[in-house]
Length: 404
Ligand SMILES: *Cc1c(COP(=O)(O)O)cnc(C)c1O
Image 1 (tube, rainbow, N blue to C red):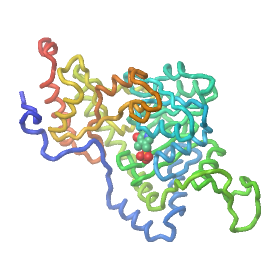
Image 2: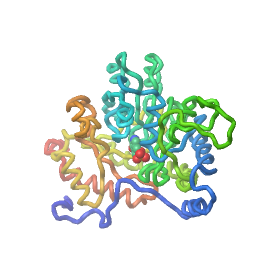
Image 3: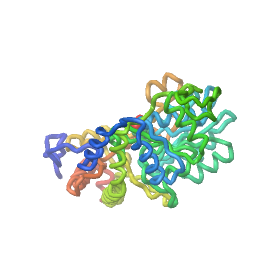
């Protein structure tokens, strides 16, 4: 058997490989350069063009570009009307921002458990948590796989809830042929460099509701409006604008928009390559009883942002920490997505306790993310698979060895 690098053996590769990174080409650089030399660096024509393009990609009626994905979630939560006294149901296996946006509004995040196989929010768990105070759901398309749209939508319709979809992982994904971004009341995207397409920093909200659209536009710029119909003191004076509520500066620059527009041209090829890599991983790992492969619901045609490797602890003599460190020593720089949000010490201080979502906690003990990005070569993918197989062979539990 090959000696693991962590115990002095030869690592599978000499140069480290990270779990994700951006892909920037000459066209992206040219687009940014052109934007920098244009008269408007912010609030210019590239923002309008980007918003049209996002509508095209997502099938939504309206899109609002903002400074990052967290700002998108914050504005969506405000526009949903979440406020003190409200409860909002959210998945715990997500980046903290999905729940933080509920706290920004003074409302209370209520964590529903995940489906143990898809890792997305479990509609049955959501239903059990609904009270007279429940105002909405923030549902995350975790790893890029669509939530169970029909089941979640039915719950929202029945109880009069606002559905915010956190699609930071899911640009390009479709559910029964419909693109993510066209289905929820508001869908939020992130264009951080680790996501499928990037603006450096950036985000957007899509919606089909014109009133929500106008509110989002206003909140993006301090709550200030130039639309006379929204003013308390309308006038036709050319200089006049009016702050009608408390908003923010969450604008995106035209420089960022130029980069993102250029990146979006490559989305089809980014998506194709990500799917290829996911298929290679699935082929390699799905027959291994020591590992669990994320289940894909047939309705979701997924552009995967993360590839989760999950250990089957009954079949291995190591824990996730040992496996993770062994991968690291082989120069595969994995990451863990995510600590259940309510296990962060800040949330602990708010009174959330361990044991709240057993499926999420079991997932967290066993999961790590393998490298997945556009310009990974086939040789890179093979290195990752080789490293995983090598570590599994080493830690395969005695019971499994005996059975082989
Ligand atoms: C990245 C991410 C965000 C936040 O986006 P930023 O652009 O980094 O602010 C929110 N939710 C999820 C699930 C994310 O992965």
